[in-house]
Image 1 (tube, rainbow, N blue to C red):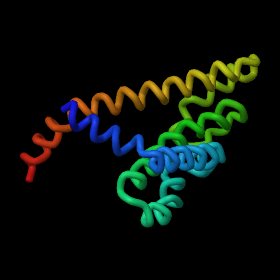
Image 2: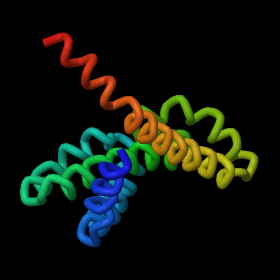
Image 3: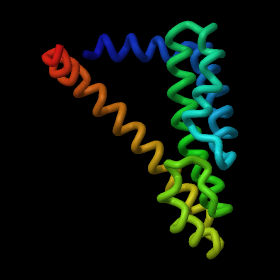
Image 4: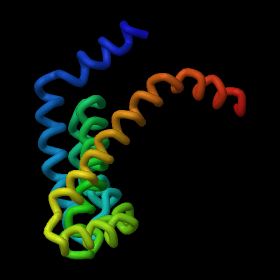
Length: 141
């Protein structure tokens, strides 16, 4: 399993892939922060560009855009009481109450920390259970 992880890190830590991730995170941040534009819409607008990329940068762009757009939807939810994405709707009431008290940085920090920890935990669980899940899924065919 260590060899597979090292191979994956080698693919992802390529400078071109890192530049694609940075650009798609900035794109996802802008799209997600605009109320009414969802993470799904940001990916739909990104797909024509990914046709011209190799598979690893294309997947990295889609994943980083989605994750960043979902987090960015919390920004207008916190500051304007208007969720940027549907995933941010549950977050609006408590975060806006903190903003009215002058503690918007706490609300946005909690959102960012939750998004980062959730992403890391999700990736770790997927790495551990992907093989077992694949074997289970093959039994249905």
